[in-house]
Length: 580
Ligand SMILES: Nc1nc2c(ncn2[C@@H]2O[C@H](COP(=O)(O)OP(=O)(O)OP(=O)(O)O)[C@@H](O)[C@H]2O)c(=O)[nH]1
Image (cartoon, rainbow, N blue to C red; front, top):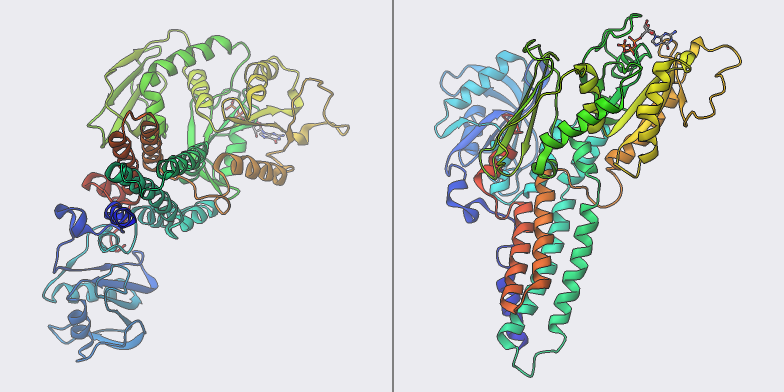
């Protein structure tokens, strides 16, 4: 019987090896026999530029540019004079390296030329390489794609590499490095092996169920493994999307009454003049957004129009309804599958008092879909892209008469915010607009933060420099707050530390705990796996139960690239530049 079980285990394990392009799909294979080359370091004048070649003609190319009969020893640098093989003209004195496959980044024979980084040197060497038979310039991401094809990197590691190249903050770099290190891939591999064992047990029972030699608890062991895996997956999915937020940036919205110093705070935090600062109340009429590095975390900082006295419940209700209408049944899916990043743009149409039109163009289940929002009067063009399932609510139109567009967009951003920086003028806390803002935004949000909606709020009392010596007048209902002066920068360190703590809660600590899910794609496959495990438990017979386990395992294989489709690969490799 156990011989049978081992055979089944081997059968079930088949296909879980690291993906190899040629095995995965005939259409995905890299151009066999073609050698590619590109400048792998950044463009422009620099001390050293690295030019890389990968493929079977790398060795001949290296020999021909160095005019040498022998290749340098593997993986050790040698100083050589490079010459144009056609004209014999010297190009540069450079370090050259030889990486025979499969022990190279791509898994193929690779050569590297570390040349002086002047544009004439770089273009001379590239020109010389293009004259070597069998070589052609690489496309964007083609080196990494070959590494993936040869099983050097799993798909999650490829994603980690793309994120590392695009990382702009310390926290993003830490998260990307962990993913590139293969932690998430290894975790999925462990889960897949657990599933394989469970599947082997179920298949053994199907094949040898009547056999007296079969141990009785074989199905029970499969059940225990599935229950354990379910708990692990559910724990991973309960991460409040911290990994995704860290990758794409947390939405931090600065809101408050007019003239409280919101624009001053945005400029202070972004260290550049993003917003116009003026003593005239109501200077900011619409949302202005800027990506910033806040205490090591990436954030999209939004400056909003000041909320006057008298605005509140009606506008909020309008936003809530429009948001619900816009989001509709697809909202959850869009949130699950994609990322939405609205941005402010030029004025489009002055014709509507207010009009909101939503056009979702869904191409198919796997391709990205696009949402375009045109806001009349507001002068705002918002764009969001998401991966989402086809929507049948093709067009939703919402017209709200009489609502100030700036106020509307401010409330809309508040709805979407991960963290709200509520700014009040410390020297003007008794004014009707301050009281209104406290009652309308701070108190309700503070009551549900952080547990309720997952949103967090920091109350900042600005213009500390204007306070009398004895400090703040007593306001018994004032929630916990920070004191700041944008003018003198007093209190800035305290605010940055509070922001660091809040953003650490929103984005998670990338160095600690289990590897975070950084893309909607990861979440989608883990959810699919969890659902399949649910079907396993509900299956009416063992054949269906085994099938559910196969589906669950398929989701994990897709996550690490085992069952990758061309479309998904194209989307991921699109993020790379030429030479990587
Ligand atoms: N004394 C003092 N003045 C400040 C401080 N911060 C901002 N101001 C001034 O307050 C005025 C309003 O600042 P803004 O940053 O434009 O305020 P806002 O909240 O964006 O204003 P609106 O766009 O009208 O909503 C300007 O004259 C600033 O120079 C501060 O810390 N101390």
